[in-house]
Length: 266
Image (cartoon, rainbow, N blue to C red):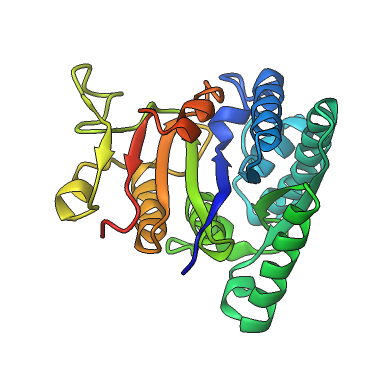
């Protein structure tokens, strides 16, 4: 697969877009829009994969806790997706950028004709300088919310699938952690960040912990799985902290940020 050198997929998690009280983190939306707009101005093509529809919808609907039933989860996702796109449109337009929404289901990747149409849509948007904002279609796809063996898995896998589909050179997963560690840093204060991984093998996979943060559902296991999928197609994958979107400047300079999983190393 011939990768497009200036094309980058950036995945933003729920924990980045909401604060500790579950409210929308408006500063995070603004910082992400500012940095991605600036990087696009440097000649890069940007695709943003964004989680957060259910969490933002829960907030918009003034629910005290994240809904547990399927009907309410899908309702929250439908409301939240509108709100997320409103916020992205608002902040990206401040930096003179146009966004587009793409919602995906598993079958969009599995049916060849749909897959081809998707590739054409992404290419057309990027050629026009538009930033696609991608999410899984939670409001209609129950498998992506509830299934234990989801294709996407809290958008970590979705971001890798999109990176492969769009032939991106880099995939950056912004999380609530500084990178990949030899132990869970939330449990072990002396845990060390691993700067570079050239091969995701059983030893590396054994270092991944369980589920993610209280507001997001994707843990390090899903991020490793995503990195492995992208690496197999030669795509470099970086896991970094979403609290500092400006770290993306260092990523495009080839500096040491978070953990780099080197493409082609599996």
